Amino acid sequence: MSTTATAVAQSQNPAQSPAQDRAQPDLEALKTRQQATWASGDYAVVGTTLQIVGEQLCESLDVRSGQRVLDVAAGNGNASLAAARRWCKVVSTDYVPALLGRARERAAAERLEIEFREADAEALPFEAASFDAVVSTFGVMFTANQDKAAAELIRVCRPGGKIGMANWTPEGFVGQIFKTIGKHLPPPAGVKSPALWGTRERLDEMFGKDASAIQVTARHFTFRYRSAEHMLHVFRTYYGPVLKAFCALERDAQSALEHDLIALMGRFNRSGDAGVVVPSEYLEIVIIRR
Image 1: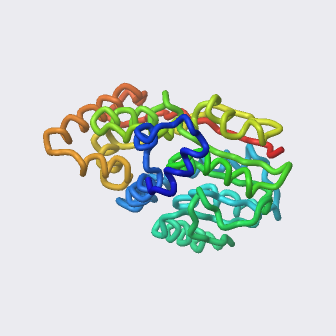
Image 2: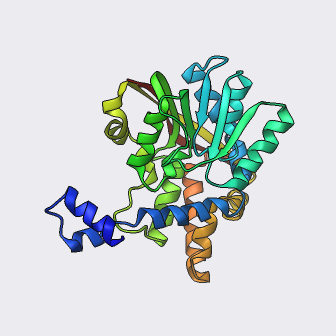
């Protein structure tokens, strides 16, 4: 943290000591690492399998033709495409240009009109109250500064408009993937888990004072792969967080992580055969902006 930032932090909390301040995570550095993580591999290979989540979210939001919809941390554009299929005026954003490129390819293939903008979820380049609906599927939950990102979603949504999200829960399969990785590669001290976005308590903290209603529905997305080995191969090749975790470990530690992830898949698998059918819980959230 810079000297200026330290001074600001101490002025806001005079009781905080310099040692306590140094213990705070460097969120800007974390964001830079996260951006590199999501730019690695090819998230679109995994992301495209999640299309049904974007469709369900748009139905739950009851979006209408002509509404302005912003997709934040859109990845390869699942929610963006879903909203555009419903004749909304869609702006799709992400801070990884390659992912926006994938989304642009998909929109062109379907002849859907979508505006694509490179943007940081923590500093959205839009006027206040400029969208009827603001959405994010498994995207904004991975921001470094959670409160700042939540404030941006609120800021750009008009009063009476809706904020819709799909966020993995801590107890669900993907939440447990991150917990398993954390046992092998502990996260930086003081950093909030992305899975908190999948808890009602944290949602109330971030959005409660600016919402006239918060509706939370537990849903499941089901991963379907040929085998546990096939699923692991896809995730460690294309899914940035898993890819980077393996790259950061020595060979023996990689084997241990592989063993634990295969075991996790086995625990959630309900296929009854050699294939993988793994339900992963997420929260679908619909917030009415006060």
